[in-house]
Length: 523
Image 1: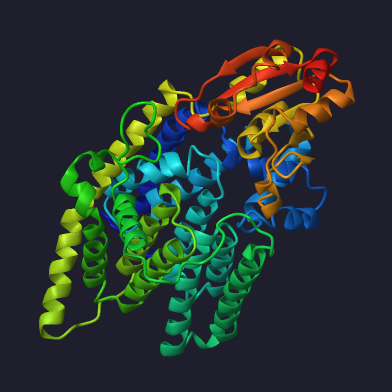
Image 2 (image 1 turned 30 degrees about the horizontal axis):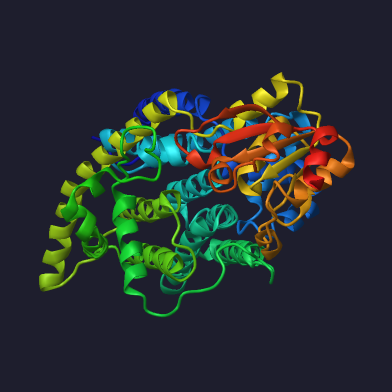
């Protein structure tokens, strides 16, 4: 089996590999496209759409994302779409196209056997977390895969490698950490192995482009002083937090969700007490095993340890995160193994050489099992998207529109769950009691922590306006703060819609009539 292709590979073989890659890509596109078609956008997908839609210039984008904690590239790519369409679902197909590009590069260029390329392409992260759920993480995946594809030609095309790291860094914090690891790897090689005489300037320019891109990305992600999301740092030793971070790493390598409506962000293996209690041990074992397997490729080893430990440190000190974030630990491992296959092994003395070769064989035996888990995880996720409702935001917006209420003022509580309904309705603004303001996307500042109960001051304000008002409440509000008895006769329940996956995005919609309700509020 041909594991890798270079410029000396016969043209006929390269053509067969291209045809193979196109076939895999087409199957992926149908598979992930099926899940995308059945996926209802939720708040984390709708937020960037609304920010891009409400930004009149690129400078507005930089201003409006200041609380989001992400670099600007994903928002910039969305921005032109808002000129041509009012349908937020357009970003789902943009995201799928980006991930499809990454899958083609994997299927065409990854220096592994065909079945491994198929398994990786059809695995949980490309198909679901980064393919069907439209977030900025697909950009980082594409840029890192493109970096691996170009890496064998780094001495001839150093500028392209720098550009790929710039793109990766400006896609997300997680990809930025891996871009930093890759940049340090390139810099070490540039110092220890002199670039080609004709490429010295370009080599250091490539490093400079990557460094500038990383610095720019970090500058964009520095939160304002009044940021209200992921507040604080955790530098003190906390064994509970450390165990959680290590368990999350094991889960990232084995993304196998439960079956049923609540499959997302769950672990099937956690049903077994030995795994549930001791899965944290898997993280150091994986780190040690993969590191030993990379021992004969020191640059790849450096990248793997720098990237993995950087991600783990971020999860510990700043944001524990979710599976979509932890997935970059597996991306780091996969790209490190890819890079290692393109490097000449060094000779190690004695026991070190033996340990390295045995670990390489262990990884070769372990990864088919891991990839089988990824395939099963993707199948469960795609089946879940087909069978269950991810978010009720789209159905709720359709209900409001069908009743002819979409042009009325809207009060949405909570802002974070009301936002996707606002996006599906294409409303320019709604009133959010969180922060006492009008807007579309959520501003993650400390002001939104000041929250007025929706049945109190917000309805008094609506009553004074004299206009009928649509009141949107989510499942949390309905359970914690149901309409008071004195207001219930004055509120017309339009209907409720339930989500089965992101259950917090289940909604009830009321029509508030101030002509009748004002009297009740004054009693």
